[in-house]
Length: 215
Ligand SMILES: [Zn+2]
Image (cartoon, rainbow, N blue to C red):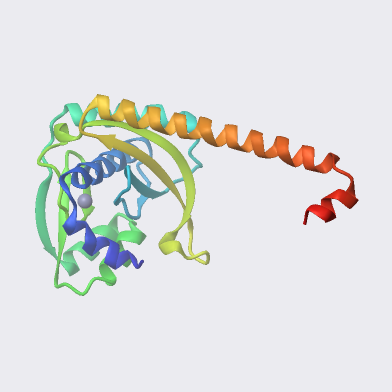
């Protein structure tokens, strides 16, 4: 899927996806606080949560996630409104070029519109069509899950970015249930692997002639 289509599709977000996508903006602001030179790519809602792709001066580790979460919690508690604006594409290009936001510049260059959507919450301004929640306090219970490498636009010839995945739910109970389901699925998977390994070992003990006969 092209980035432009992904960008367009955000318009059809359900309330849950809208909240998750808003959480991605908040995560981006937290990352901006930690790395003022961070470059931002895209941050859509996905199944069970959201992600944002970042170009950062160093590799993130799982130990960074609690700090990002704490900063997100402060932004959420601040109840900052998501303020919508529309800028002529030239103004947006100028703004993001001045901030060395190469990925945003490329996104705008690929948008056909004369005007582009801009959203700001607190100290973070982003190119986006929305929609978002009205203010940051409407983002529910969330947890950052992991960091993974992701090529810009899925192209292995383009820069490798750092994708931080998070999950977000309207209530703490829903988040807890989701994490529990994940844990249970992981346990089942481990158990299946163990059983498979055991039966492979047993087969290996069968004389070769019998194995052939069984085929
Ligand atoms: Zn957005």
